[in-house]
Image 1 (cartoon, rainbow, N blue to C red):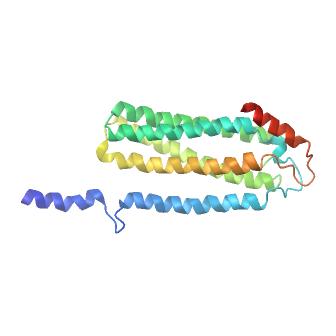
Image 2: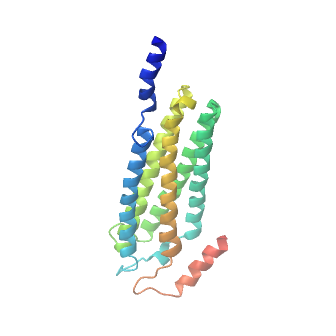
Image 3: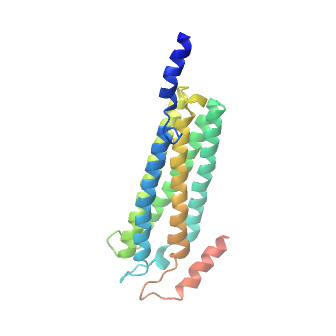
Length: 226
């Protein structure tokens, strides 16, 4: 009886229930992601409001390289699959699988960041900086904050892999990996929206004084990748 009372006494501390029936850590993560939706939503809305209003170049059609960014987007989407496998390995208590898939997710995320660094440097060499025009300001702010989120996720994943090496990740602590997975999938979804609006829709904008003849050339380059 005393043992049962002790178990029932500690169970609420382990489960951390809320009035919604959701674990309080998971609920807190959902609240954070919801606030982050508003944050990215405001940045995306700002980009769309000022889209095509730059008075000086370079304009999106001059520098946006859709094929290269398509590759980096594919890499980031693959990292979501690796994150799913990491959680599955955690629930199955496969220590080797946990470490491998966490590191694989972090590795794919690092490749994405590498593509972004390359793109930023290329744009800078072609004359686009954050203070060049409205396009540069909104583009670097939006994609830069997303890159910071990905970088934070990579650090989180590496920390989890280090914890897994000590044997402290398993079915009982699967929530730790699940929360990281929620964050990572959110970052991926946000990038899909950014990629669609900035690269696929806005990537061929010529600006007020742009040369419309450049648009078909850019579209042809993108279709050539497909």
